[in-house]
Length: 164
Image 1 (cartoon, helix red, strand yellow):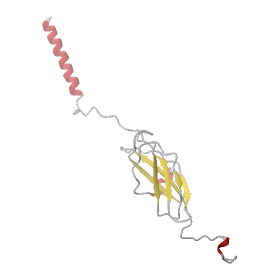
Image 2 (cartoon, helix red, strand yellow; image 1 turned 180 degrees about the horizontal axis):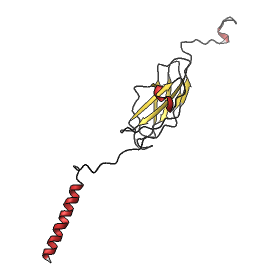
Image 3 (cartoon, helix red, strand yellow; image 1 turned 135 degrees about the vertical axis):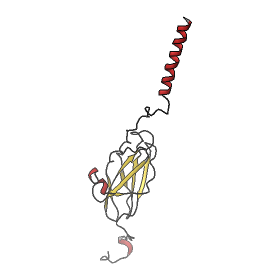
Image 4 (cartoon, helix red, strand yellow; image 1 turned 90 degrees about the vertical axis):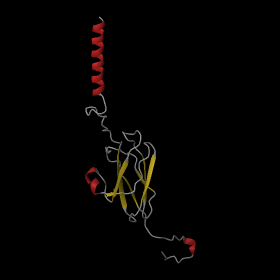
């Protein structure tokens, strides 16, 4: 019985070694799970506080996987016509965007260098580290104000009634 036990123990050890070697890091058959979940699409993009040459954008940062954690980068664009997936590549890409905040926190960016009295449309996409890209955000729009320095006079400023 002692010989049988010894043979059985040898077989168990041999199986253990085979299993251990097959699970080692040097074996290329074992890979980490692939990240296929993109960040959630932004749904609350707003274009606010227009001036003669700028518009402020605010939105809630999505996460890395859906709404969880922190995404890696934004791709934000604008145009004077409505933005859609079909014309995304033709819209003007905004540079120098800050990295996304943790999902759920408010992000903001001021777009400058815009023309006065012009309506602009804005949209963005978000990517994780793979990169998996989110869908297109909602489209926000606003119109820049009349540019220049204007003085406003009231009726009591002593100007003739026909002065504009």
